Amino acid sequence: MSHHGGLMEIDVAIVGAGFGGLGAAIQLQRAGFTDFLVFERSDDVGGTWRDNTYPGCACDVPSHLYSFSFAANPSWSETFSGQREIWDYLRGCVDRFGVRPKLRLRHELRRADWDARRGRWRLDTSGGEYWARVLICATGPLSEPAVPDLPGLETFAGTVFHSARWRHDHDLTGRRVAVIGTGASAVQFVPRIQPVVTRLTLFQRTPAWLMSRRSRRISRLEQAVFRRLPATQRTVRAAGYLAREAMAVGFLHPTVNRIAARRSLRKLRREVADPRLRATLTPGYTMGCKRVLISDEYWPALTRGNVDVVDAGIRRITADGLVTADGVHHPADTIILGTGFHVTDPPVVSRIHGRDGRSLAEEWTPSMRAYRGTTVAGFPNLFFLLGPNTGLGHTSVVLMIEAQLRLIIGALRHLRATGVAAIEPTAEAQRRWTERVDRRMRGTVWQTGCASWYLDATGRNSTIWPGYATGYRWRLRRFRPADHQAVEIDGADRDLERSDAV
Ligand code: NAP
Image (cartoon, rainbow, N blue to C red):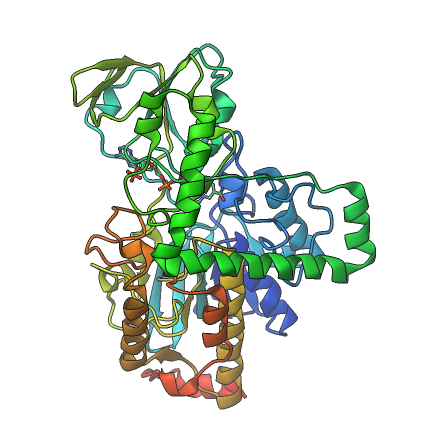
């Protein structure tokens, strides 16, 4: 750390302290790059696992896999852990790897500008201004709740909240609750709130494909074995990894999915006796086109006497309820939005301004593109964790984060070894990468015609990695100097750069 022009100067700025940002901090520290800070807008770490506290919130990827490869947790209490346990795990990692001094909580990134004269990012945060040579954006695809533009929402006299901003101070006992959305979040909280509310009206736009969850408790004996013989947990993790990779076959070759779809429909028949409700819940699109959800409680909860599933579109909201397209008024005193996140238009990107002053939002309009899902031409020394086309439907995104971190550390070592101040991918390398991704996307289940948040405004899938996690990891195994160009530092500070590098 040093100062320049009254501003604190650091080598690497990490924005966000969720899985990505904490992973970056830990891996940088372990690799010997210790001059960094983590800026987090909230007052605690954990990202999406801090924000999503709705009842029933849990991960649908097994915990042994949904954790850092370098930080096993022998104490997971369930095969699919709940939010609290994952959040505790992340908080535990902060101290386990000694990165707490690096955290700058309540520091929201307001603006980042590449300063070509200094070859540095100038960062304006709510906790002060900084210079950083490298910017790692780890703000996460699921950090900004999407609130639908429903006419009259502001006139609603009751309580409205989003699933990622759960109002624990609002007791749902005896309430008439309207839930909008039937995605991964709603599927988890609906069975939890159904027994306590008087009336639950679930507004479904698209029914979800569901598979069994079959989570089970991990016994004390198993935990003791994992603790004493860490290799056993690594084996369980490896087996889980391979099993999950096998699941990708169905996404990449949709015909294979027919077997899984038949199983899902059998489960629906078993869990829902009423043929009309069953028809409402039967998906009309290829399984996997939207995220496949896992639950053993969701469909049974919808058969209860206090639940209505409404699939007519919402026309408007009144002071005391919702009116659907068929003119029916559905009374409610609470509306819970299970309506997802700004995934293809994350607000943070309008705050990052590259070499020619353009924002990343402009660069990514109408579609997000990044070399290896990580770096962007025109944005020197910027690394984006879980950037375009790095999402997964079948396994743990922590695998993708770790692959990206390996690449970033490779890039930092390259900068150190060559004395080059800044790099960015060549436009050609970025184009080639994107073309390959788009080509591989054709024929996958995500292109079978459903509307999903995987697709951006142009209909392009800019979120999902169309392959196996193994394939992505392999492609990112090393930094490729040939795909990058050094970025000119044009100002008087160039000499300073040289002396810095020595
Ligand atoms: P989501 O999957 O985006 O689901 C949003 C739901 O709201 C969809 O059913 C959508 O309907 C509906 N919706 C959105 N806007 C609407 C509108 N204007 N009117 C009516 N309905 C509307 O969001 P999510 O459930 O919060 O999950 C987001 C992602 O978070 C997941 O895909 C997953 O990656 C992650 N997640 C994971 C877990 C887990 O691990 N178990 C749990 C929660 C979340 P349409 O389908 O018709 O668009």
